[in-house]
Length: 410
Image 1 (cartoon, one colour):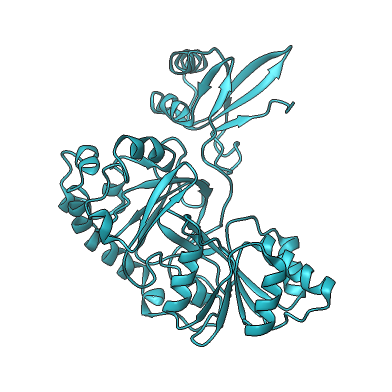
Image 2 (cartoon, helix red, strand yellow; image 1 turned 45 degrees about the vertical axis):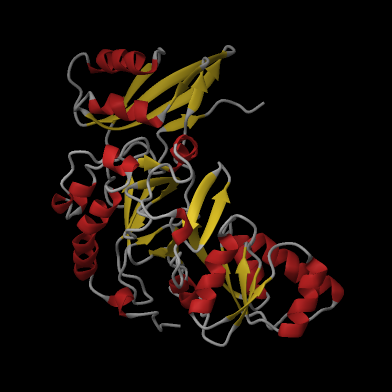
């Protein structure tokens, strides 16, 4: 399957970058009309934010902070200028975080991912994502209908009724979690019901390990992963190349060191930060809290956008040590104070029934007194004492961990 959704997917990377950053200043101006962005971006000249280096100077907005911000200024924290009634649907996700849906076709940008999975006009889609308050069901529903598919709004659960619906409508496509796909197939197999009509699937919202991928494939179902959040919709999607996930169009995605807004080196694991280009609901450098790494080589499917390795863990690595919370941004502050440091990892352990900290530091050079100086900074920043261990460049794993809590569980 090499057919592409549109010409945007195969344009040159330079043309894509020029388009995104050519549109960004107008989005920033629209964002700054909202009180929260006006405060966060005060003094910023939108016309000067025309490349990634300039974008990286803007403050990060952390998804984890949205519940408190929205409680202080309901419903959207002062980050949206459009009237609440101008949106198509209004949702809430755990947190709670309140999300508006734009009143337009495919408002979450999911059609591109469904198309890459082989969904086409005339297909019937069994959509088992939830339709109640959270946007998952509507993300897939609107995308499938934008492609010309008919949608069965099944939602999760009700396995017996799902069997009846599948037998009546014979859907060719499935959308839902990989876990529920397995439940449906097993239920059909145990009852001797034929659901072989389902040949393609998009799955999201849960882990899809290689073992489950193989299990689904053995049942004749060609399944593709989508990476999406309720805030910005589909961020990346799997293609026929089966090598990472291609970033969605109309998004600027950065990979930054956890606890900072600083972009990591190419190929290094870091936190996903998304800027969308929707002037009605702008997201400017939203840190979604997930880890990944970029893959810049061209994809075998012909799409030219950057790929990511998929979900590689959570970026929020806050640890409570001796009763004190230590956060990734504190570790980043230690690095900022010492030019000799390239990369840090704070390892938390336990010895003699007491919490321990060891700050492992990849360094460019080791001038006299560096270990003592870094140990002093560690205590100043965290209010806790810890050991410092210097390491050569490249010694720390490329896994995005800034704080590694290695204390035994239980």
